[in-house]
View 1 (cartoon, rainbow, N blue to C red):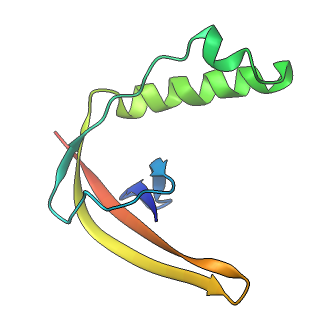
View 2: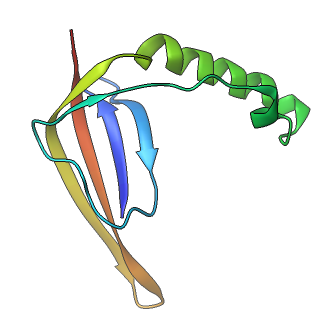
View 3: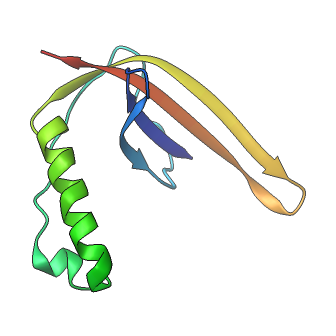
Length: 100
């Protein structure tokens, strides 16, 4: 199961995605405290140099938007995808508002 969090905006701003979860710990109405970790050289040294600056800028933007913020889950969408050759997947999308 994959879980995506989006900020309720016109463009549905992605907050974070969790992949391959065994269970779903979230429900509508939950408030989730966010913390965007700092990006250290050990985190980006394994990537190609031309990609590192983009990673740093993206992380800085996430920190500015979401670090030490709280979101409230307002609605959800559930999607099942499958075919005959692969295991089925469940994706849950949560649409959230910032809590001031």
